[in-house]
Image 1 (tube, rainbow, N blue to C red):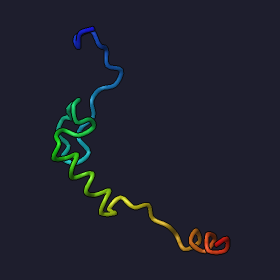
Image 2 (image 1 turned 180 degrees about the vertical axis):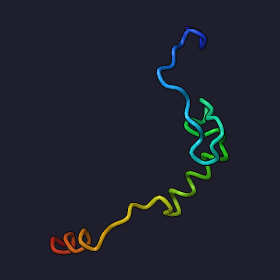
Image 3 (image 1 turned 120 degrees about the horizontal axis):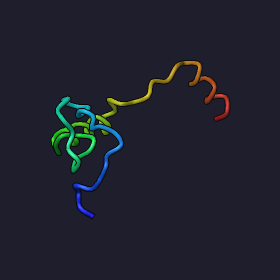
Image 4 (image 1 turned 60 degrees about the vertical axis):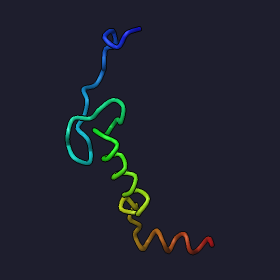
Length: 63
């Protein structure tokens, strides 16, 4: 089946890092550079989920 026969159900979204048009090869990013920037952010803890003090106290009770 050729690439031309594929019907995409959703439009492409912009790259979440630089807002340029995303590329299928690096989806959802536009380039390997933006994919690496995102990976670095994950590994350095930039995308950490915030925890409230109440949640921390509840887990301490069961430890």
